[in-house]
Length: 404
Image 1: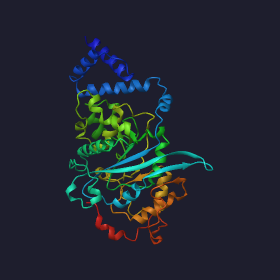
Image 2: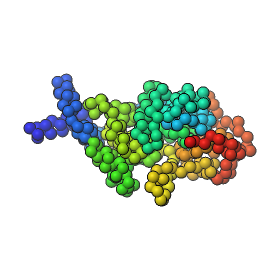
Image 3: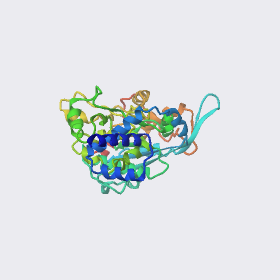
Image 4: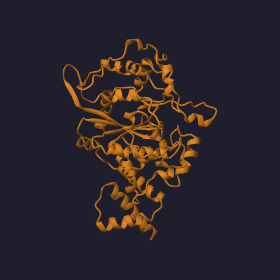
């Protein structure tokens, strides 16, 4: 009887992986039976389906050609904050470049065009303490009041994701915190996203337990905790956890309770995991059959740096601050390495300093907008910087906005 059930389970997984036809009676029986399985058995089923799909000889190039669609890009910035958003001016300046963008090739030939836009969604731990009218208008209604290294951060991110995908025009979601800023213009970022699978790619710097980056600390505080409920090879960690996901991939994560056949959320089993958001999203992508795969670029667009030599191991979990280093040279070095966003900044960054380092850098690009010029010159040249180590003139004053 056991062998018969194993065969049925394998056949069912194969049919699910290859979209094989099933009778209504079979579907009903499977749903009823699956609810009786443990969480480990259900996640193993999803992992088998993912492996079968990867092993199947599917003509991916044909799939891609059939999904060619709009060139529009709409990025939802989903930020988890405490009670303030110190980089408000930076993000507003970046977001207001809502334009129809044209990228030109040699001569006057237009290669591609489409509308580029963005929206901001904020989950606040203490929404009642937020003073800015603009930021209050972007705060979602739910608050889970997460602490640092808390699974409620994952709940906050999932709530933000649901809000972002409620806008049918959202194509990508960037997860961020109040210490993050963009280091490329919105049109430049949209052009970058279109380069990969027609914009249907996610950027997650993830690794599994076989990777040399997986430490004993990772094994103990992530893999050993999750392994009783999730296949070990499906568990992944992303650094940083603040990644950029395309709409379809994020939707597949939100659909996991349905795919697990019991309607229950997966996040509770990450309660004791260290930095749960770093493990939840790449692991969910693996269970959804996306990671590993050619639709996920194994690179983060968010630059962050950790002190790997800190004597106290918990201190290694805190990214470095770059307030003293921000400037044109610093941004150029990050851009050469492919980064489009960065963290962390502890203090409110001077808007003119940001524009000099980021927007002026884009003046030589073949980008044409029709709403707000990306060559905004409202800032005085007195605030220009020539070194990545220079601070803006208003830096000392901005200390009043220190994040607690």
